[in-house]
Image (cartoon, rainbow, N blue to C red):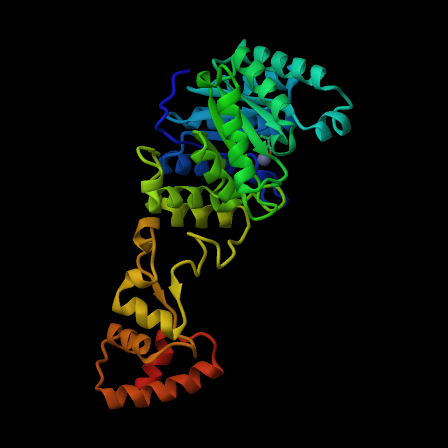
Length: 384
Ligand code: KIV
Ligand code: ZN
């Protein structure tokens, strides 16, 4: 498969790794609605499910394959013939099907999960890719727990699966173990030691157990990964996966650090899709979540509000409009200053001279100490 080295492929796994979260299961029509939104958002690949895991998941992959036209639809398997054959069957309506197969690569997984040897696991990896290749051209291989794998062995495995036909090699930090420089160096090592690496795309798949999933994915991009696997709101197993919206906004804010790198993501759709995924999956977004949290663009202390109102870039590195919000929030609390109060009074049509504002501000502080959230009705009562 020919790929554009300047394109960052966004692989969304909200409907697979994200949907594995307890309580987040979706119906097939809900999955179709989210998949269509992901397509409009501009993702390149949607991981639609793990077909062998249940009849419902199989059917979802079938229906998503029919419903989505322009995006690659990917199905997950373990490295065995039956999983792969079932996935191929589920993908039969996909216009652009991809099978995502793989096996553990760390000694921990090889010994305690598979009770096997490095050599045997390597053979199973190669056989799985060859079997998947007999159904589809586009085969992604994941080296599970690559974050803790021995590097020369990982490189040997990656080289062997590419030789067997893998078009994408996923290097998952399954347990969210790595530091950004460790994960970045791992990717770099693969680019330098795998002879046929230019025949495949390297993919970063990071988990957030130490809160480093986004940082690790960025380190991977800086070291040559050209696909990032992520989810809306960063949902996923345990502490979650890399958050799609965080990666996209980092690339936008720091575009100069990623010269020429493109993606098709329309960031203006982030707020809407984040809210839809959160409500459909019954998974609230933490208020201080970067990019899509309720407070991500809310300024609440007097010092910040005053600086923001003088020049928004004093306290704003991303325009709220760029993620689909109408405006930044100047939240009124007992920590707010006169400038913020004046701003809100003017918004409601009240202009005051200095003395009137000072008197209103005194009454405002008493109210704000007593009542945590000050809303427009409170301000109208104050001025009347
Ligand atoms: O975290 C992981 O290793 C995975 C693989 C199945 C890709 O989700
Ligand atoms: Zn995962």
